[in-house]
Image (cartoon, rainbow, N blue to C red):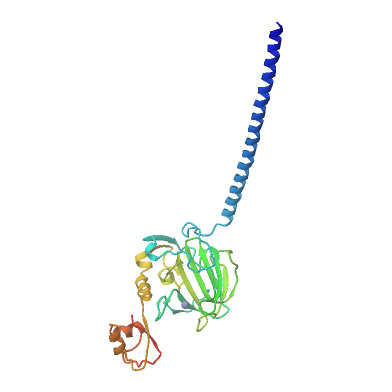
Length: 293
Ligand SMILES: [Zn+2]
């Protein structure tokens, strides 16, 4: 009987010892679980904050522009015309003309002698208000002394970007959300400009489109409310761009004539005249630059 009592005491002690250990292990488990829970909560909170940030940082047409939003460059997208989809539907229904009163286009889109003109020039009076063409957000406000002068770039909800250049004053701030028809600037004559005008560009993924293919400037309305932008028609100027990229220029020297230069570059006088928009009878000057290819 005594042995049995001793046995029972030993058993109780052993039981106590093991259950304490079990409690300890269990307790640690609880601590680990609690820590995990805190960590998960923290991670979740971080994710939630990131999500909230993302929501606040949403920019127009983010899906098309692969979430690239920078004011460093006019075209940071590195998407050539070749890489575009064959056709893209663009909603132009909410278009507002950039100028309340259209006078005339003073310079068209296309190749100039030495460079490409990526927009149209709309005549204006210094002080005229410039309006946003569609709803969107201000991506760039900058000043280029030898180029655009003071200019604004907007990214629109319909996937297009518009450029407004040679401004005298900007009325919006960077990242500001604008509606179609919001006043964004005052027209001027800043940068490389020979008279008051608005240089107006329409771009898609950085690639300029001739604005007159989308907009009837005389009536201030889009040609079609649902514009089908196609690589073939909307970007038909791609050949000109490639030709200009491969262009070769020559500075006229003493003793040169058009025929001498044409022979030297394996071309014809007619071709040089067409490229430079000059008459074959024109006398060339020493130091004058001619495009020969
Ligand atoms: Zn221009």
